[in-house]
Image (cartoon, rainbow, N blue to C red):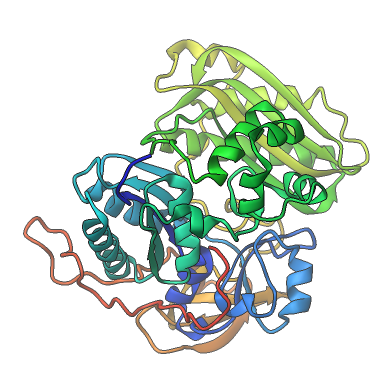
Length: 473
């Protein structure tokens, strides 16, 4: 393990909810919950204001509504979050060539590899500058942990939340870890934690005192060795710049089980097209098409078909998925469908069109995706997901507060406006249409190469209250 705290862990604060607060002035400082809004939905992210009421990520949405009935409940805008994530990752890559993204809002950075830090002082300065740049570029806040290992850097960023920086000095790691619960360590989930608790092991110090042999006896050789090393603050894992994707997939869970076989087939075709969009966005193709079906009784079936070569042709993927669906009994109803592609490559095999017998003209897979289910239009009524962007011919840009019974309620405001007025329209109002999200921070003036200068823009936009209970994310 290195002797300087030059591994950085960044975790954006309540990322999805903070992005929504930044783009919607009327929600700043208020409880916001982002996730699936149907009966089976779960919380993706809760703002710190919502966490005061006990709302947490992965909680059933119905439970969240009981805990915080007056919170704003919004459907995720993943394309919007991804665009912000790309801005943040660009800032990280400016610090070092070794950046290991863990998700849209979390990453490790090896500062030493980029020459950005070599000791505690330089690491602290790099972390402070990064936080300032993130606020200037995105209008959001992130928490930074600095340590001599990945495990400790992540622990440090958790202690820094929200909107802070914590550096763990080399030599202090054992004393810091000792009183912490065993669940603090990577690889200790609920099952392992319960197993250790039954053995009388509750803290990291007790884990170290148990000894390596006892942990191997309790947890097995690999897990026991790894946890003993971590309890002693030993973590030699390097920051890995690239993680090769093994598959690309999309899936939808339905609020009401689908019984109609024709509807199931239509859903599978839409999923296949969405999967191809992701493949092409990543510059990939694949040989194996995978269909996932979760039935009414929660039984999950997976079927796959391997082609002669890699493809990113939507007709090929659609027809393969349809063939796989033909081998699945959907009697009784379907609650989840998914389509994936594995065996990835960065090229396509040109003659694969032959595998799509009677292939139809290619669908418009490059169309922008909108809505919680990738922009599928409702057959009878236009869909207006809560929180998504709209534009009205007379009133301008706004976002959907809610819809139902043939009406949609919109609040008209932008990231840099005061809280806006609320108006209600028929769902088929021809003057109302879906819109793209607006940038959170305006960049003026431009730098010498036509790009925004770092630190310019209104860094206060989207600031999240840090008075609530801090708990990850």
